[in-house]
Image 1 (cartoon, rainbow, N blue to C red):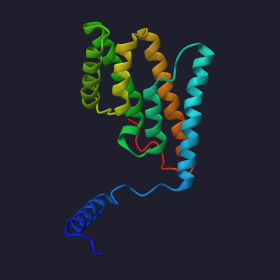
Image 2 (cartoon, helix red, strand yellow):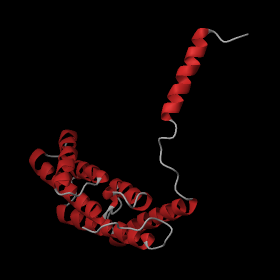
Image 3 (cartoon, one colour):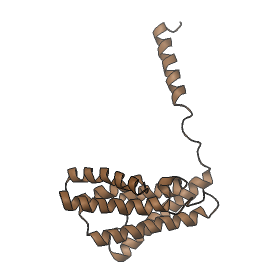
Image 4 (cartoon, helix red, strand yellow):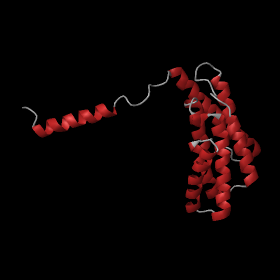
Length: 180
């Protein structure tokens, strides 16, 4: 029993789609690099939790886990460099606080803050995509300004510091590729 022309056409179309999608992803990193990046991410995020426990404050916020993913799993990207991690997070937090002061705490204001943070980071040449979420968090949670900015600075410096140590291990790409 042979395939009908419709079945053959579907099969060919599926094969073409599969071929078009195949091979587009970059090669997988070496297992040792993946292991080091994973361990570094766990250690850095646990350090943020430990700091928070010691001072009875929340230091680990979700955008910092995304920042850690960039620093440890993609250390050569511009988004992962210290200027972008530290600067992008702080710029976005300030944008969030300005939006909070002007528009109050609402989902609408948080959306504006997230969008404006993207532009502010671009103008400052410190793009860091996880940081746009930081501005949203600021608007929605209304944290104390000085405390939040100080803890965010400490947290980003911890991520960059662990990134530097890992980048010198020889098992991952050297980090950072540039400082400022």
